Image (cartoon, rainbow, N blue to C red; front, side):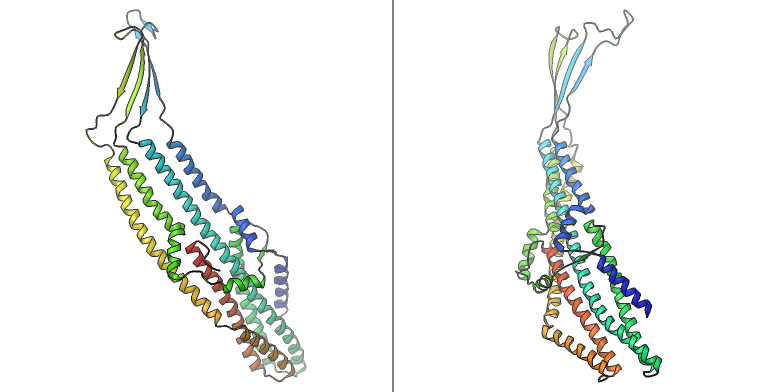
Length: 413
């Protein structure tokens, strides 16, 4: 029993030493410090670099020609009057460069949508973790209140048991309740420790932190109602959900890729100028050269066919994604509605009556007007009820966040 008291004191000291943090503060730290989010931003920067690269022209080619060996005079590198200099430039036709730039820009839009989706997912995880820790702490507070009363009661029973005024089995029964509460508290705290690890990772805060909300904020969160019907939420999600928008953009991206690959079948022209000192028809002549491949076949036809397949595939993926999104929204809405209805069935008057009866049971038990069996039975029921109420509140808030994640626009009043 002394060990239980020491553990409770240590836990209380640990909780007191934690730094309280509000949800806006946690979100601000998340945006600033989250390493996964920072890493994802590099994909956008890389896509910007691809756009720059796609706009760069091929370098012109310069060549110099002269005699390497004169067999008549046995001279090497005879820079006599037979030198020539030429410059050639490749000119892309068929809109290749334009199509490549458009494809690179489309890739950047995809990278931006991937970043947006990751931002939504991580932010939802942050909020769910924040709320879960908050309500789990409320459970611990409720258990601590019950443990405080029972611990004092066990101390008194120990004294009376030693004097022979109370049977040992009654003391053991109370000790069993204390152990049961302590075990439940330990399990909740283990869950909190795991969630705090996630919260530290998400926010980048290494110091001990504990979520903080006032009663008005909590009540507003729980009582929030969707501003739209289920069918309207589905329509809104199709306009804002980054994951679905990504699949839509993939169709455009595949079409841009197809257009680029198809333009690669168009032959390009190589144009050039040449100065010939003395080996042509005239001295110091300037010649113009034009070269173009002979298109006996389409050299990029395989990639064009592949690009067409990618368009068809992306269209099918979009249809699947749309169906999945609508089904997920339906399930998330029903889950929230079920949790909300369960919470709404709990009247504040019922909670007040429960607390009042429990207080009365405690007082009457001290006075000897309530038997130990009746007290322990009601205390166990009270514990299960108050913990369940906190769990219901948590599930209402978390299910609302899951619905928000899918619609990805403010939908609660």
